Length: 448
Length: 55
Image (cartoon, rainbow over all chains, first blue to last red; front, top):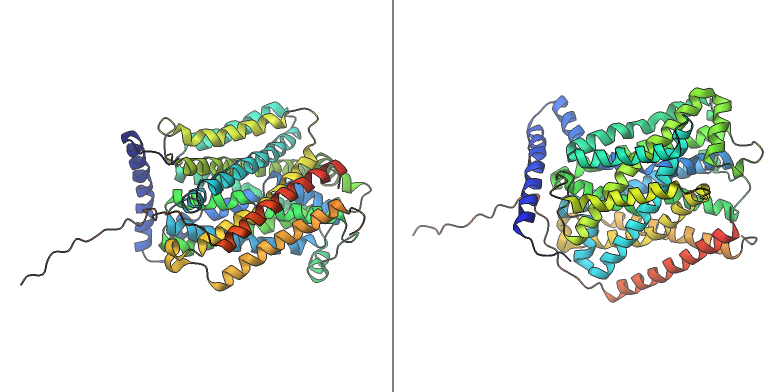
């Protein structure tokens, strides 16, 4: 599977190494400089994988989930729960920074090389399936958002696919990362939207004290909890951030900055997610029939309450969320496939030399864009189901991560400390428990 | 007597670590098999939930 390295492949890898060396020389020069401005520039140079993975986690499916959650359950349980989710996401993603910086190998490559082809195929198929399903929700968000501006779904789906492809194919890693981060900054549009709703901040604060659950612990509540955790922590995030760390060329000297990068990303993710819940929890919650509202109804409702500006900003936020996640998921699929099959795999590589690297990711995006255009597809429930499926596969992905982070032969002194293992095992236990509760709620829908 | 010259091995900090296949301990293998069963069961339950219309 990892094949023979011929002369052409060697030349491609040398070109990849040359481009990465240029980026690393820039970082090395900043590291040797003193003074606060230079230190800040060093931090900015090393930011990227953590912020991108966390902001991309607030994808279209996530925004839709948060909007429906706020509309159905108001300003209660889910606000502090999302803060906890952000902390959990940081604890998990920080491990991928260390793993990538120490080993200089992607997650798929590590699983394949360390545990063999069976687990390699298992992880790769899981990831590609989950990424493609998740990409469907991204294109749902893009088409729904653009429909507010009168753009037909065909045009918006094709447009989103074109942007995704262009950014990946034309730009080299450093430019790809910087452009993606500018797109990711658009995620913050939900913060002024939440402020436009004039929420009762005392009720937001009270949510942290009481963790109230309107309607009690019903099957539907368990389903929504699972969907929220599914959108906060997903397997693709492990693969994406580790591959991104490797492609960026981070080393053990950069681990601290990688941790800061991940922490900043987690903070931004939580702020935006909570903002969306506050927005719909204030404007939509409590109105008759909201528990059945899809994203289109929520957009229309927000338009009536906040005016055209509010509806347009929400729609733009949805389009941005779908776009940044599509960029991340496409890269994630390409990196994982390249690692699994031993192909040259870097966004630094030109298309002509590494077309096999680019094809899997773009093909999955094209399939997802096509599915979205199928008439009468149950888009709302498909969105929630995608999130639930991701949280079901997550325990396996975390188990591999734990095994690798405790492998002293490859990690050396950077293995997990006891508290990190306790945290990771607790997270796996929490996800397994939530999934088990969901299973019981399906078998005994009236008996929880 | 002059000391022998020693080769200095320069390690590129970007060199990937060597990867060797390992066989997980029996306890870990049992956990993985349990995980497979669990995932298959949960996927079936999600499909049941879809047709029952949990939402």
